[in-house]
Amino acid sequence: MSSIAVTRKAFTVRDIEVEGTLSGVIEAEIEALSYIHVSMGRERLERLIDIKTAASLLNTVEEALIKGDIKALQRVSSYVALDYIDNVVYGDSVCIPGSTIKGLLRARLELCHAKDGSAISCMRSDVKPITSPPPPGAHGWRHARIWKAVSENRGPYCNPIETQDYTICVVCDIFGAPGVVGRVMPSNFCCGLEAYEKRDLPYGEKVYAIKPGTRLKGSIMFSALKLEEIGALLISMGIAKGSSIGIPVLIGKHKYAYPDMGKARFMVAVLRAPLRFAETLAKWGLNCSAEHIEIVCREKELQKLIDMAIDAALTRYPQLSQLHGFSEADVRDKVVAK
Image 1 (tube, rainbow, N blue to C red):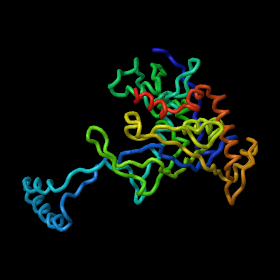
Image 2 (image 1 turned 90 degrees about the vertical axis):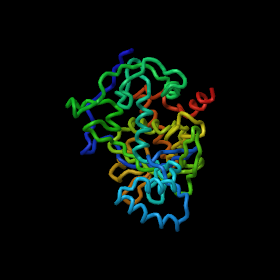
Image 3 (image 1 turned 180 degrees about the horizontal axis):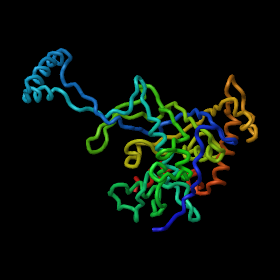
Image 4 (image 1 turned 180 degrees about the vertical axis):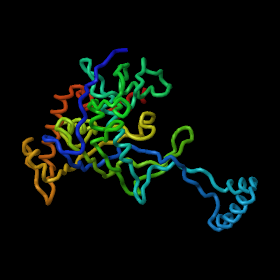
């Protein structure tokens, strides 16, 4: 097992603005390139009887509960069945939760291999490195082959609450660690209820899934990020130089198992920041427009910022070169096809 040095530094102060950093919001969309299912953890109940009969059973259920009549309850339960597993829904919107988005972005950075004996992450999401890829059919075998998992001993993971050491790795400083709030905060990405439908999967599994071609709108708020950290965030979204539309990434359940599940891409539309950051953006050579109390980067200036930030990230964190332009979704399709 190779020993790896993790790049660590004093955590970035959260409660004051740091000169040379930017706080703002990236407005974006996620386009479903295949079906996507993010489980709500519950199955719907399918009614096998008409409304009138169902109403008459309510009294039966109440009486059975009072009397403890198990047989009566069993008879009533025969009139309903578990249906399809729900996707996450809030009100009248189907959503990919912000927590899921944050986990995706963080994991993509954590899975970058070390370069020249140095890594940018303590790999909190995978604290037990594998010694060899699992054989085909075993748990995690596709993941291991897609990401070319290797054994890297990155030492103890960042845990300031336990160690009282607030010198943390690059990824934990951006996304958070115990006792350190993250500086990247994605919203839920949502669309209308008409955008999902029933899907019958192998082995009898039934789910509601977001349909291919659906666009889910959301945003990613960030705080006190340096230019290279903005670049790292963009790379984690699958954004590459030359375009505001990302390469395909994987998200949701069964993303590794089935080629028609879990493929999506981010599409960056606008970056907004409070007007007080106009000087910072000007120092970066950007001519973004002032709109009311905001400064807004879109189109040419947005693309210029994307390219500058990614260049800065690749220079500061050369480990990210393996992730820049890499699509685990495309590799997944080849692995699954074998």
